[in-house]
Amino acid sequence: MSANASSTTTASPPRVPAQVYLLAAVVFCLGTSEFMIAGILEPISTDLAITIPQAGLLITGFAVGMIVGAPAMALLTLTLPRRATMIITIVAFSALHILAALAPSYSILMISRVLSAIACGGFWAVAAVHTTRIAPVEVHGRALASLVGGLTVANLVGVPMGTWIGTQFGWRATFWAIAVVTALASVLIAVTTRTTNDEHAEAAPHLPTLLRAEIAAFTGPRIWLALTTTALFQAAVFASFSYFSPLLTQVAGLPQELVPGVLAGFGVGALIGVIGGGRLADRNIFGNIVGSLVALALCLAALWAVAGSGWAAVIVIVLVGASGFSIAGALNARVFQIATKAPTLAASVNTSAFNVGNAVGPALGGWVIAAGFGFRAPVLVAIALTVAALLVAATAIRVERSPRDRANASVQERPLPSTEAGCR
Image 1 (cartoon, rainbow, N blue to C red):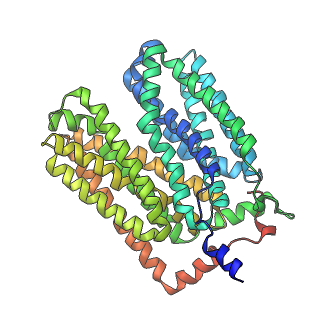
Image 2 (image 1 turned 90 degrees about the vertical axis):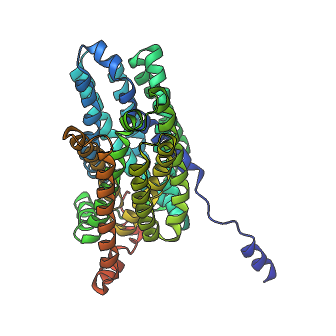
Image 3 (image 1 turned 30 degrees about the vertical axis):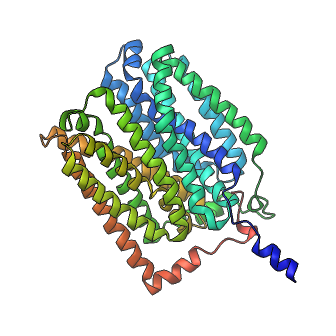
């Protein structure tokens, strides 16, 4: 008895599995590819004889591919094991970057970007589901935050590295580098990833049954409130972030050469926020969501107030990164908490929600600048979007406390028996 008690008391706390960090490394590559275009617009436009705005549309094409492609890929690969889906999507991603590196025209490059985004969305959704299956439930928030951390590090390290490669060796070299690294990642995933117990279902249902189970999770308001919170939060962050450069140079009066360092500081803050927020999400998801949104609104308000004060603006921008991205793990974990019976489709639609924010936020920020309100105006837009996200989160909490919705939630969130778990 004492030996058992001793072993119980000395048992190590739950940890994020090492395999999650491999998936985060793949997400780092995907994120680098998604955002690196911004740093090589000029070489692309010169080589392909197109305008800078046309080259910029490659970013929009990737976002559209993610919005549409992630749910589509989730549905198309429902009957495939997660391991196979991850390998297929990452191999396709690598091959499409080879196509981009060899692209003889703008149209071929655009097609490769849209298709790459579809593969990216498919991998992200399945990797997120796999993470929740291999990580102990006590560390789901931290595990999912680790995946988002790969995206954050991509902005901090990968994008500057991709820009340097593109300027030193030509923009095509950047695509070759991504192709090689992701091909290696597919080999590592094939070697290290194991099929989980829920993929060994003896009586896996047919595709129509799987589709009904996945789509049924979207019939209630809870999932839509979660997705709306995700989209509004992401729009708030990118409405301001997209215009930090002119804010720093035109309003704060900093020289242009300091802007990359400030943006790197934002990335450091975001990484700290992701790590700390993941731990908070494991304790209290709604507390993390509300607390992060309140902190983000306050930091944005502070940025608007001190935008003309040079280094004060720099410090607050780092705090915006930390407060904003501290919510990332909770937003992902909340979707999985709601849609137990539809993890793959829910993860993919949540990915689409993030990309809706990526598209809407910069558009709104650019609109107020074009309307003549100045470079501080996107910060006010970001504050309004953050407050809207808070109102949606408050509605979600109220719905959660409704007796009827609690009863529905207990049914929806009950894990499937192994014979109903399907191939996912």
